[in-house]
Image (cartoon, rainbow, N blue to C red; front, side, top):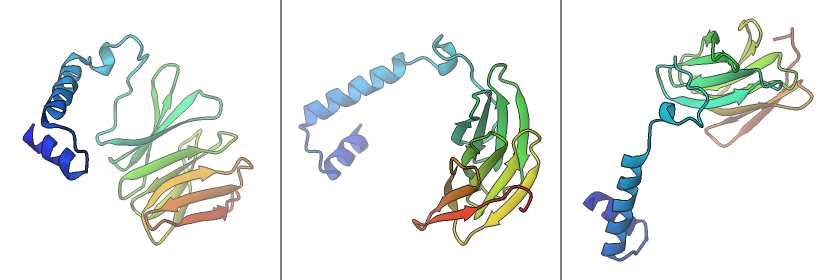
Length: 168
């Protein structure tokens, strides 16, 4: 409790000691009363399979599939209705930070700490092309026209390129 109180004061939050302790006590009580996600009937399904943190998820445009990006260096594609794992996309050498579907749902892009953005065929999981950068990528998104892809890196840059399927 002391460490948390000092951190609050260091951050410029000058709450009286008693208020800080009461707040911490309420937070700890809330944590004890919180049930695991699987026990809550509001959660329809919990998908398991990644061996590292899940950094991002994206639904396909039709909502039938869910892609997940993880610290385990993979992208996984799941069938939403059944929860079945369809593909494990391997090829990144570092954590995968972002994933995005193309507007038509045919392609899937993944951005990674290995300084690459990879484009996959969503249906088969086949790697179509690898785009290399100078810094770790943190985000990616397809333009609504499906021909342009943007990716953000750790140096604050956004790379925008035209991507033509079949020319990867």
